[in-house]
Image 1: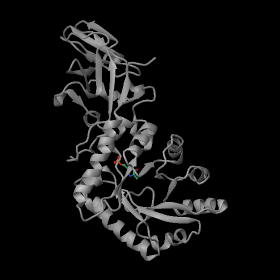
Image 2: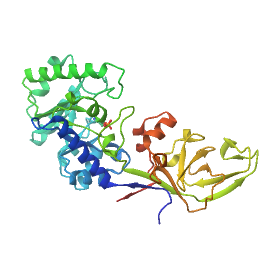
Image 3: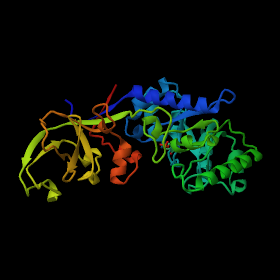
Image 4: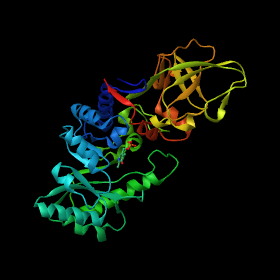
Length: 378
Ligand SMILES: *Cc1c(COP(=O)(O)O)cnc(C)c1O
């Protein structure tokens, strides 16, 4: 049995995006310099695309390192057979570090207390664990502050059971062309790197760039870049990319009912839409429980029979309604919520467009696609 609303995930497109990003890095860096590695970011169930198949496809395409948000996510990947190094970005719960050792994961150490906890856990096991040191250069979230490293990192660097594999930072506003913080963070990071090195740290790897930073400034590529969104074929707004990226996920459904509405009758909860003339409404079995934001009510559109039709009335938990007046629409007709239905530009709806319509970011649009929706892999 399968529901009408499904997310099709094109693993070939994912792999093509990965290769296109690698080719872009190699071309820009030129024949003289080694291009940076691509650390593929697969946190949050691979941005809603499904962590296990996505991670395996990226590994098959040549990804040499993956990254996810926490130990639990990383364990899922190991259990799925992923063999390449996996970096855990997030703060470590100081109480449960077993997974790091059992599943051969690479932690980020971003606070002195986490440093002590991981050192203690490694010492108890009699092993030496490689880690990535995170520097806070202006995000003011996780990471050792860039401006007092001389006080905070020597203890970590001298931990006998820990090994500094990499140093990294994260940009707060790589997608904001107006703000100068991006450039300031780069300068702070470089001075922090110099400090770490002067204290005896010699990381084999330095990395900083998410998708937006990768697109914006090759000076922040260092030894590896960390794209997430771009891998899934979505360019972080408002940036543009010359990399040929294709959307990986499409979300489709089928019309379950078609209904005539008379003038002055409304549709759905609170009659958020009222017909001024005889109207035809198609009912689509996908709602906010599937991650379709209620703000799409009266705002977004879907594709049916190659045409854009407006979402009218409230998006409810399990259904939405679209205005197909004047069209010959029948139950069973395909509905494209994200993806394409034809070759014209207007026959494509992407996560960027949906995000702009409802005042959010494309990361949220894909991450919120619900667990009720089956992912089909091709
Ligand atoms: C999520 C994340 C990324 C990837 O960000 P995108 O904007 O999706 O490319 C990179 N680095 C860190 C630390 C992250 O948390």
